[in-house]
Image (cartoon, rainbow, N blue to C red; front, side):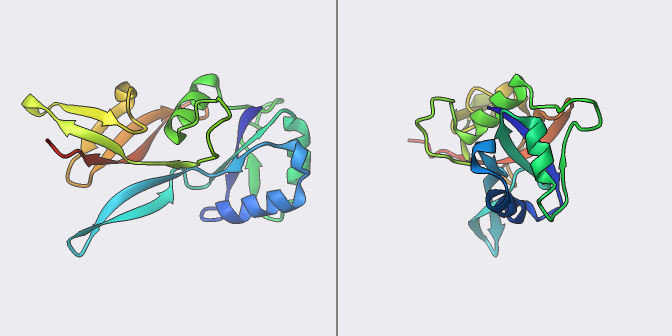
Length: 179
């Protein structure tokens, strides 16, 4: 199945997904989700895990029949716009875009993992000369996409391809304990 992107009203991702699940035929699409990220924020001196939308205002949906999906989306009473409709055909995510999305969400395409739509924390280590090494997590082996790591906020700025352009997403990192 191919990935397509719906633009929805801000903070209406979950509501849109619920309407899609209720109103559209189940066999028309595979997954319907909005990716989230786990980060840690400091509140009153304590680090707290926070779960936020990775790409606010977007819902991802997989289908083999984009034209029928477009037709059926008219049943959803919320603002939904299938991205790529400004041309005569529907624009699906490119293989490169699918790869980073699947990689960050921990899906290798084997079909054996549970459906997971949250990007977890990546573990980092500071080496000699202040070089940062990704030890494990979603950013492992994706170092070339990292623009900057903010050690104060424990956030990595990552540039990813998205809808024929580049966009910056922020992902959580944590320091590994030295042994």
